[in-house]
Length: 185
Image (cartoon, rainbow, N blue to C red; front, side):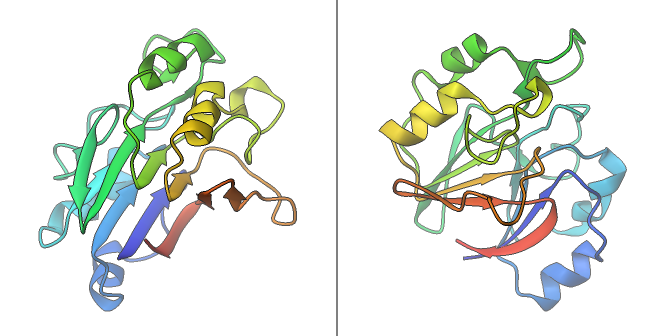
């Protein structure tokens, strides 16, 4: 399944043209966009669009753009089950920011089913994350992929070094995205 995955930076491509020219079957947003960054997706009606919000998102543009918000939800497409987790580790006390304490993340993920594809803004703890709390991964997400390994986990939010980037964790393929990537799922 040919997928256009977007995260963290306004894509420097013509979204509609790329979707058409590359025969994209699914669009996934991993968050940290302003509504205007993804506005061209409103024109895309022939394929599904799914996503999660990042910590810098307003949390209110997906429906307008015809996107399905997968935070705390599952969805079936192309014989695969998808699930998602929005936001990042809470590092400041802004009630409008989409962030969770490590304890809140444990509560959110407590009853997640096993899925094929997991989309998240923030990575699992210890996988492409950083020591500083603003870019630290979720402990509960690491526990989830260890106990119920999805085939693929897609994330943004952090800035891993190309040489040390984690691309596989146990049975789970890890796909990091900043800007955009075309990924075969």
